[in-house]
Image 1: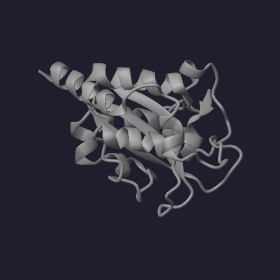
Image 2 (image 1 turned 90 degrees about the vertical axis):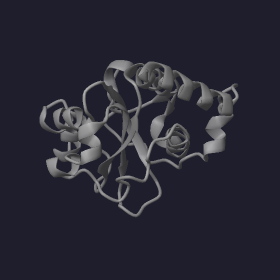
Image 3 (image 1 turned 180 degrees about the vertical axis):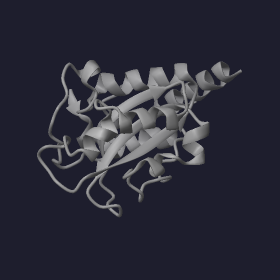
Image 4 (image 1 turned 30 degrees about the horizontal axis):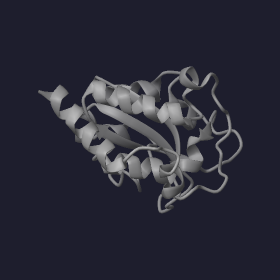
Length: 179
Protein backbone atom coordinates (compact mmCIF):
# COMPACT_ATOMS: atom_id res chain seq x y z
CA UNK A 1 0.00 0.00 0.00
CA UNK A 2 1.38 3.41 -0.99
CA UNK A 3 1.83 6.25 1.45
CA UNK A 4 -0.86 8.91 1.06
CA UNK A 5 1.76 11.65 1.18
CA UNK A 6 3.29 10.61 -2.15
CA UNK A 7 -0.15 10.71 -3.79
CA UNK A 8 -1.12 14.20 -2.64
CA UNK A 9 -1.68 15.47 -6.21
CA UNK A 10 -4.12 12.67 -7.03
CA UNK A 11 -5.99 12.89 -3.72
CA UNK A 12 -6.42 16.63 -4.31
CA UNK A 13 -7.63 15.92 -7.88
CA UNK A 14 -10.02 13.23 -6.59
CA UNK A 15 -11.57 15.56 -4.01
CA UNK A 16 -11.77 18.49 -6.42
CA UNK A 17 -13.58 16.35 -9.03
CA UNK A 18 -16.13 15.42 -6.35
CA UNK A 19 -16.79 19.07 -5.55
CA UNK A 20 -14.50 19.76 -2.62
CA UNK A 21 -13.25 23.30 -2.32
CA UNK A 22 -9.58 22.41 -2.03
CA UNK A 23 -8.42 26.02 -2.24
CA UNK A 24 -10.67 27.23 0.61
CA UNK A 25 -8.04 27.34 3.36
CA UNK A 26 -4.98 26.38 1.36
CA UNK A 27 -2.95 29.38 2.47
CA UNK A 28 -4.24 29.42 6.07
CA UNK A 29 -2.90 26.68 8.33
CA UNK A 30 -4.92 25.54 11.34
CA UNK A 31 -2.97 27.20 14.17
CA UNK A 32 -5.73 27.83 16.73
CA UNK A 33 -9.35 27.10 17.54
CA UNK A 34 -10.26 30.34 15.75
CA UNK A 35 -9.05 28.78 12.49
CA UNK A 36 -11.70 26.05 12.68
CA UNK A 37 -14.50 28.40 13.73
CA UNK A 38 -15.60 29.40 10.22
CA UNK A 39 -19.21 29.46 8.97
CA UNK A 40 -18.53 26.66 6.46
CA UNK A 41 -17.19 24.36 9.17
CA UNK A 42 -20.12 25.18 11.47
CA UNK A 43 -22.80 24.38 8.87
CA UNK A 44 -21.44 21.39 6.96
CA UNK A 45 -20.48 17.76 7.49
CA UNK A 46 -19.07 14.92 5.42
CA UNK A 47 -15.55 13.87 4.44
CA UNK A 48 -12.40 15.70 5.50
CA UNK A 49 -8.70 15.25 4.86
CA UNK A 50 -5.96 16.77 7.00
CA UNK A 51 -2.84 17.57 5.04
CA UNK A 52 0.48 19.22 5.81
CA UNK A 53 2.63 21.83 4.11
CA UNK A 54 5.86 23.49 5.20
CA UNK A 55 4.94 26.84 3.63
CA UNK A 56 1.49 28.39 3.06
CA UNK A 57 2.46 29.19 -0.55
CA UNK A 58 3.73 25.69 -1.28
CA UNK A 59 1.97 23.64 -3.93
CA UNK A 60 3.13 20.40 -2.26
CA UNK A 61 0.49 18.94 0.03
CA UNK A 62 0.96 15.81 2.13
CA UNK A 63 -2.38 14.14 3.08
CA UNK A 64 -2.01 12.59 6.54
CA UNK A 65 -5.51 11.73 7.78
CA UNK A 66 -8.95 11.09 6.29
CA UNK A 67 -12.10 11.18 8.38
CA UNK A 68 -15.87 11.39 8.29
CA UNK A 69 -18.32 13.23 10.48
CA UNK A 70 -22.10 13.29 10.61
CA UNK A 71 -21.89 16.22 12.99
CA UNK A 72 -20.57 19.57 11.84
CA UNK A 73 -16.97 19.83 10.72
CA UNK A 74 -16.46 22.37 13.51
CA UNK A 75 -17.58 19.91 16.21
CA UNK A 76 -15.28 17.19 14.90
CA UNK A 77 -12.31 19.51 14.33
CA UNK A 78 -12.76 20.91 17.85
CA UNK A 79 -12.38 17.36 19.19
CA UNK A 80 -9.31 16.81 17.03
CA UNK A 81 -7.83 20.04 18.42
CA UNK A 82 -8.64 19.58 22.11
CA UNK A 83 -8.52 15.86 22.88
CA UNK A 84 -5.09 14.32 23.63
CA UNK A 85 -5.53 11.77 20.81
CA UNK A 86 -6.82 14.36 18.33
CA UNK A 87 -4.88 14.65 15.09
CA UNK A 88 -4.73 18.48 15.14
CA UNK A 89 -3.54 18.40 18.76
CA UNK A 90 -0.74 15.96 17.85
CA UNK A 91 0.55 18.46 15.29
CA UNK A 92 0.16 21.46 17.61
CA UNK A 93 1.98 19.60 20.40
CA UNK A 94 4.75 18.64 17.94
CA UNK A 95 4.15 14.92 18.48
CA UNK A 96 3.67 14.56 14.72
CA UNK A 97 5.62 14.52 12.49
CA UNK A 98 8.74 13.43 14.33
CA UNK A 99 11.16 13.47 11.39
CA UNK A 100 10.71 17.03 10.05
CA UNK A 101 10.09 20.51 11.49
CA UNK A 102 8.08 23.47 10.24
CA UNK A 103 5.09 21.63 8.76
CA UNK A 104 1.60 22.86 9.58
CA UNK A 105 -1.81 21.26 9.27
CA UNK A 106 -4.51 22.25 6.77
CA UNK A 107 -7.92 20.83 5.91
CA UNK A 108 -9.81 19.83 2.77
CA UNK A 109 -13.55 19.26 3.24
CA UNK A 110 -16.25 17.73 1.09
CA UNK A 111 -19.84 18.44 2.15
CA UNK A 112 -21.65 15.17 1.34
CA UNK A 113 -24.08 12.83 3.05
CA UNK A 114 -22.71 10.56 5.75
CA UNK A 115 -23.09 7.39 3.67
CA UNK A 116 -21.30 9.00 0.71
CA UNK A 117 -18.52 10.21 3.00
CA UNK A 118 -18.07 6.73 4.52
CA UNK A 119 -17.86 5.21 1.05
CA UNK A 120 -15.25 7.73 -0.09
CA UNK A 121 -13.26 7.30 3.11
CA UNK A 122 -13.19 3.53 2.61
CA UNK A 123 -11.93 3.97 -0.97
CA UNK A 124 -9.13 6.31 0.16
CA UNK A 125 -8.11 4.05 3.06
CA UNK A 126 -8.16 0.93 0.90
CA UNK A 127 -5.71 2.45 -1.56
CA UNK A 128 -3.40 4.56 0.65
CA UNK A 129 -1.73 4.33 4.03
CA UNK A 130 -2.56 7.64 5.76
CA UNK A 131 0.00 8.03 8.57
CA UNK A 132 -2.46 9.18 11.25
CA UNK A 133 -5.28 6.71 10.48
CA UNK A 134 -4.25 4.16 13.07
CA UNK A 135 -7.31 1.93 13.31
CA UNK A 136 -7.64 1.52 9.54
CA UNK A 137 -3.94 1.07 8.80
CA UNK A 138 -2.96 -1.07 11.77
CA UNK A 139 -0.59 1.45 13.28
CA UNK A 140 0.17 5.13 13.22
CA UNK A 141 3.30 6.25 11.42
CA UNK A 142 5.28 8.86 13.35
CA UNK A 143 7.12 10.24 10.32
CA UNK A 144 5.86 12.30 7.40
CA UNK A 145 6.90 10.80 4.05
CA UNK A 146 8.37 13.76 2.17
CA UNK A 147 9.73 11.73 -0.72
CA UNK A 148 8.85 13.04 -4.21
CA UNK A 149 5.17 13.07 -5.01
CA UNK A 150 3.79 11.25 -8.02
CA UNK A 151 1.81 13.13 -10.69
CA UNK A 152 -1.98 12.47 -10.53
CA UNK A 153 -1.97 10.42 -13.73
CA UNK A 154 0.31 7.86 -12.05
CA UNK A 155 -2.36 7.03 -9.48
CA UNK A 156 -5.27 7.24 -11.94
CA UNK A 157 -3.67 4.35 -13.79
CA UNK A 158 -3.78 2.21 -10.62
CA UNK A 159 -7.55 2.03 -10.89
CA UNK A 160 -9.12 0.00 -13.65
CA UNK A 161 -12.30 2.09 -13.75
CA UNK A 162 -13.77 4.91 -15.80
CA UNK A 163 -13.20 7.97 -13.63
CA UNK A 164 -15.89 9.99 -15.37
CA UNK A 165 -18.48 7.30 -14.61
CA UNK A 166 -17.18 6.94 -11.05
CA UNK A 167 -17.55 10.66 -10.28
CA UNK A 168 -21.05 10.68 -11.83
CA UNK A 169 -22.06 7.68 -9.72
CA UNK A 170 -20.80 9.29 -6.49
CA UNK A 171 -22.80 12.43 -7.26
CA UNK A 172 -25.89 10.29 -7.92
CA UNK A 173 -25.49 8.40 -4.63
CA UNK A 174 -25.04 11.66 -2.75
CA UNK A 175 -28.18 13.15 -4.33
CA UNK A 176 -30.28 10.07 -3.52
CA UNK A 177 -29.26 10.08 0.15
CA UNK A 178 -29.81 13.84 0.54
CA UNK A 179 -33.49 13.43 -0.40
